[in-house]
Length: 164
Image (cartoon, rainbow, N blue to C red; front, side, top):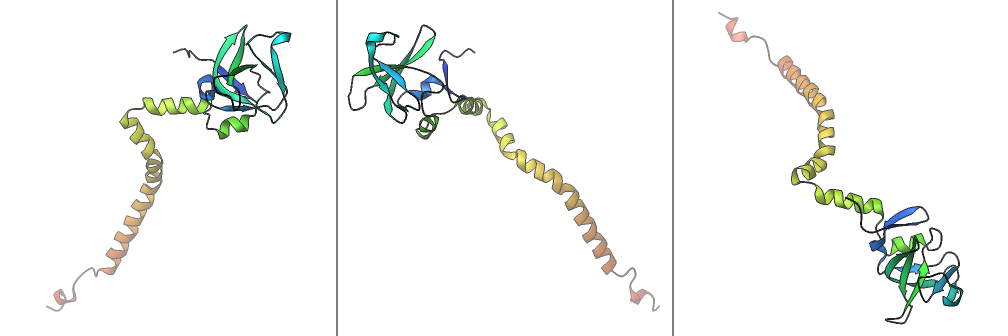
């Protein structure tokens, strides 16, 4: 099934775009923050500096093959600004610290959701099964040693039968 949402990359780590909604973006490079999702000289509100809070992701749009983040202005509700996504523009650690799940984490989550209860039990028991496979020969040898020891302790005949 094809994904309906695009994926975005931050320093080589891929996220589903919906994971970024509500997350705060911090700049690690200069970014032109704009009043509209277009590259025009007259719509630049400001240029962010590395380490600066750029805004909280409210939504996104793909325009002219670029993903644009619609950001709530810091300390201003219902006022928005736009910044074009770039792999090297925003802090990855900050996004991860806010709980955004990577594409790989989401795939693993979905795989676990799709598992039947039998598959889940098999997954839980897999390490136990491997341990048991290694323990079976040890148990068999142990039983053999105990059996030989017990057999050696028993006399082979009773003395009372010899006195006749």
